[in-house]
Image: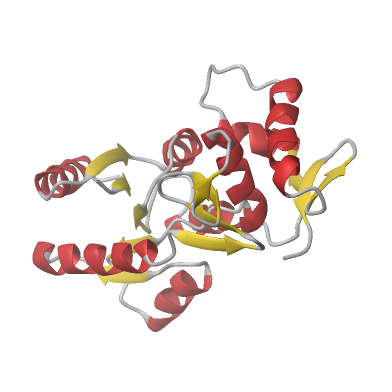
Length: 217
């Protein structure tokens, strides 16, 4: 069951989207402002974002840009009343996967959601050297055999891979891997790094005092 985050500041339309998507069988979280959406995105793993563009505090384009810079590659559909080509170009430039103009036709929305999710499903298996990763089940394989690694370690692996060689700070890793209120100590982080280094000893580099980065592959 796909997990969707809806960000829409019109409360009635927000609730309408939530009801519609839940009736279609999706798990749905909602937010009315970008700050709340950002916090929710750090606490959960989503298969799709549905973002309004005109929002309080900052627009949806700027929020997606922040998420992309943090290594979040979750597919995103913008829902907006903007009709100009410049806005369309900006949305795709910030990392959008699709774009719908309001008023929204719900039958069309469902088709677009399904299409984006199908593309995501095709990316659920990644080859990493002699290993393969099922990103949906969070299982790492060598050949046909699952190797011993926790789901949090897999989340860390994905975060490092998504950064494409850039350093991911320890604080950012802890924000992404642990929900608010959970104990996210440096020691706990090192446990997951050690798990991964058992299988990828040459690929994970500790940048002292900053964080970690993936090299090679």
